[in-house]
Image 1: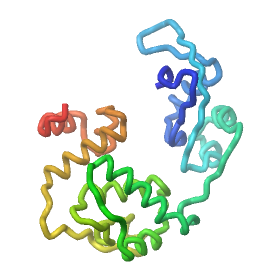
Image 2: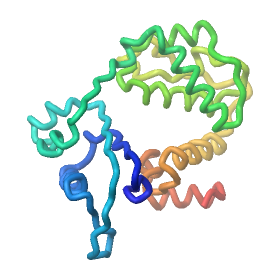
Image 3: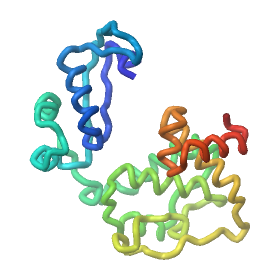
Image 4: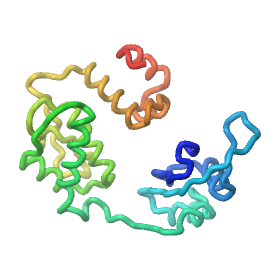
Length: 221
C-alpha cells in the first residue's frame, strides 16, 4: 500500500483503531521514510504525504494509553474537525442521494429516489456512525431493493435504542433469494476491501475457512 502511494498521499482511515504495536511501526515509517518488506532486510524508501481520519477522541485515547502520544503529535500537524452528520440535517438527503447513485452503478440497479416517508426516516435519526453508517444503510437497501422508490420500510436504520424508527424490516412481497443476498454481500465486502479476502471475511464476521467455502460455493474465487 505504501509503495502504491509513492509520490502521492495516503489516507490512514480510522487511525484510532490501529493496535499499539502497529502504531509503533507506522511512526517509524513516518519518521524514517523507510520500511522493510516482509522477509527482507533491505529498507525501502517511501515518499508519501499522510492524512489520517478517525471517529475517536484521540486526546482521550492518548490519555488512557490506547494511542501513542508521539504518533498523535506526528500526525496532528493540521487538524480539521468535521461536524457530525446529525448537525447537517439540511444535507443528509443530498448525501444519501449521492450514495444512492454510487450503489446504483455498483449493483447495476435503477431507482428513482426516496419516498417522503424514507426522507423523514433519514432525517429523524441521529447517525452516531456518521457518513459511514449512512453509506452502509443505503448499501443494504440497494442490495434488497426491487422497486422504483426506496421507502421507509427498505431502510434498516440503527439499533432500536438509537432510532425513532425501530420498525422491523419488511420482506418484499415477491420474496427474497437468500443465497443471492449472501452472494451480493460477499461481492460488496470484497469490493469494499479491495479484494482482500481476509479483511472481507472479518467485515462479514466469518472465519477464513467459512469465507473460503462461500467463495467456492458462489464461484467467486
